[in-house]
Image 1 (tube, rainbow, N blue to C red):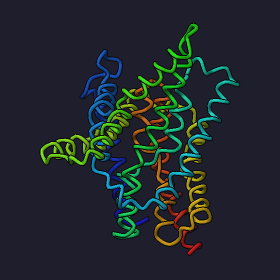
Image 2 (image 1 turned 30 degrees about the vertical axis):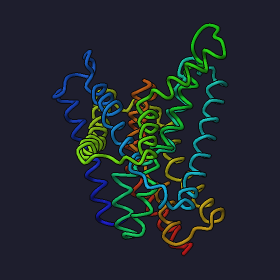
Image 3 (image 1 turned 180 degrees about the vertical axis):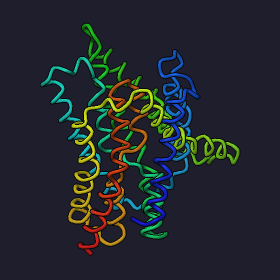
Length: 328
């Protein structure tokens, strides 16, 4: 790990600590208030800042220059991993008879196990280790990361919530409810709107582009402060076994799958291979907590998983850099 990346890691943890101090000191109110500060921050991120970031990113995507083979080398195994993990979580929930209690838990845990911190840590790491060539590849992956790895669990969780509705319901009514809740959603709707705008060829007016860029830039600090607030109000209330499981899956299993698929499935080597593997090896991203807050499930676990995996990334990143060096 380079000194620049280590400094970025410390900056992230310092911002989280500031949110924790603010929560403990009551600067933003108490966590038991009707207007829970953590909930306010979460809603602001989910309904304002994240949609602005997603719409702008999608509207500005240049599909013609996208390195599709490299993109597929990352997202094919990452999506497959997410679907398998989600299916496993649903099977476990049904077996333990918990599915009526937490229908959103499988999708929420899937985000924690598959969605990485691709911006705050990923961008400086790619720039420091691989220069402009590696950074360009990483940015291409980042431009699709939230669009794919957040939209997928959003669809899954809305289907699960529709299934969990009490009482008999016609199949057509269930389908209508699921489609409406999936499309009219703070994650999916801006993605669809951005794609429509992109394909229209109109482009973004400079004023609109600057406004969206400003709103999107707030995602990172708001989410980091939210993590600190959640730690202050809720503490580390998650099962350490569950957090450890998520950390191993995110930091070790997912990058191993991407390495195998990218090298021996898609034929990548050199810088492209290193970039996709380290993208997969990044710690759990802040959107895992926003997702958990949105559906009011596993919030303490998501918070703890983010913090613990970020600390553990100091060691796991060195491991993957060593593996990549060994592979040449």
